[in-house]
Figure 1 (cartoon, rainbow, N blue to C red):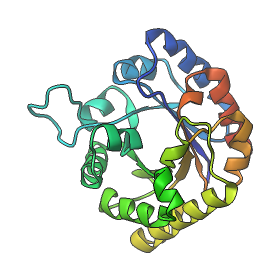
Figure 2: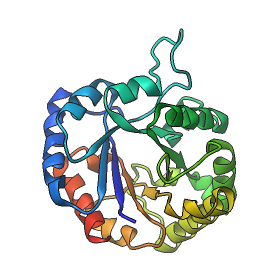
Figure 3: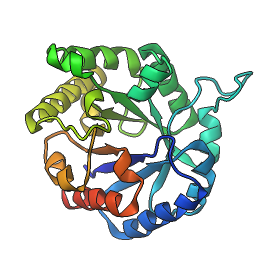
Length: 246
């Protein structure tokens, strides 16, 4: 299957950075992979207006369609301004916003309700990795975070070791392979043969210099990229590696 490279801008960027999105979009006129950028909420509409070849995503959503939820945004509202992907369960939100597995599941279902594709993030901490709990943590997160119906169209899984996000640390090839293989096995056993085609992204200090090696690993169907997605030249390196790996 073709790779998906998604950029998570987190709480970075201003209206002037729409120019970076336009550069990425222009580069993606003739590539053999799917590309998405998830900017902060205020930039979604402008980003969507300026793109033809890449998709725009959001970084979170509320579980309800509407209501008295000051400061929140529903999946339906995000879709209305152009979001086709919505991240749920990123480790920063699990930790900093106390989002439990159950909350992540409700958000995943809200994304499906809106018609967008949920990118569900899972991953272990460094302590859990040292205690050899990685696979059990991933299993529990998938059991409790994933919605009832998962298809290649409505769900993408992003495996992001918490200890590798923004640190420059990258798991060994065998560690990534083992995690992705485990995730694939869980998906197929839970959701059936169709889950062979659910994309599983790797995230955590992905950059142009290591992207080719990461994309060569079995069951790595793309990347969720943080800091390296903020600068068009850096992100294009990763996109090129993904396109060439198909």
